[in-house]
Amino acid sequence: MPAYLLKLLDAKLAFTAVFMVPMNQMADLIIETLAFTLIGLILFAIAFWIIVKVSPFSIRKELEDDQNIALGIVIASVIIGIALIVSAAIHG
Image (cartoon, rainbow, N blue to C red; front, top):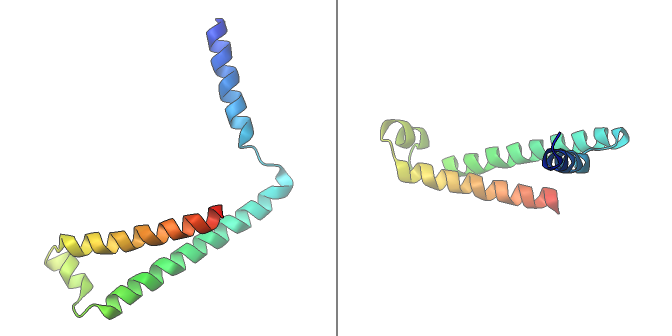
């Protein structure tokens, strides 16, 4: 096998070794992942509920019937903003 292929294979194996987690920490990581997923979903639901309650018109009608792209962009920006906040909380 050529030397450059061995070097590439070694680099790939070293890269994957960084992400290996000991089994005694696996349960903690899974619980943390599930907790942050639940928190994120709850925040998304609360944000969408606030948008629906605050707006003077039907969100569903505007998005589905009237094809209001601007409203879709505003709602998407709120969701992306919350996603950034949750990801910052995860990474500390």
